[in-house]
Image (tube, rainbow, N blue to C red; front, side):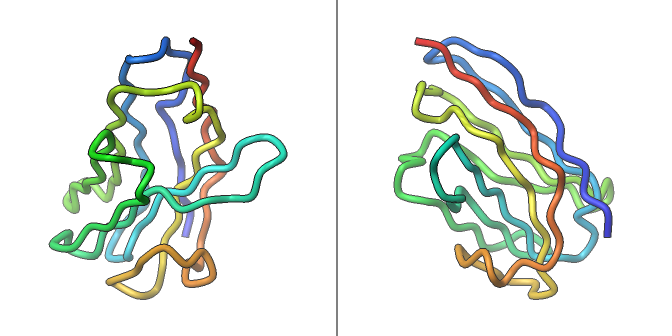
Length: 119
């Protein structure tokens, strides 16, 4: 399984970005992030085919995870970005079609895409 994340960049606080991850196929999918000096943390997950989603509490309704199965693509729409959202964002796939926030349940990881939010 090859996962390819894209869509990161530099944005001002309050702005938006949409991350994409190719290769979602029939897997349960998730987004994680890791800031310098911090541990990897869960952001959001979505089941296959997409009926169930789960979010970290810090998302607070600002992020939306979705998938387009015919394109094998996962998305993370991020709105009202804050400097604290600055991190490398990773997409991950699980052999479980319904998966949550435990990184140990994910079997495959993409290479990460950098998101930087300036104040």
